[in-house]
Image (tube, rainbow, N blue to C red; front, side, top):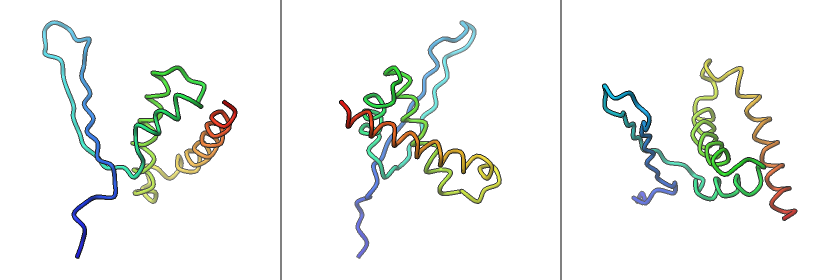
Length: 105
């Protein structure tokens, strides 16, 4: 019997436009996704070990967890073919940097 409980974390992201021209309503975009990683843990580690300010670390952690799994899922997609090897190198370096920074604290 298949389990109904997902092994992945589920998230909902909402983006709200906050600085719009008066002639139109602000736009919003909401989407949901699953990720095997705990998004909040990833972002916290990014804040602790990336050397970036809090807002930049949050943006980086979120963007990596959105882009990385998508590229892994569709790594043969021509759109990602040239970028994937560079992303892999970047991720290896980032993980090494963060582990070193957190361990050294």
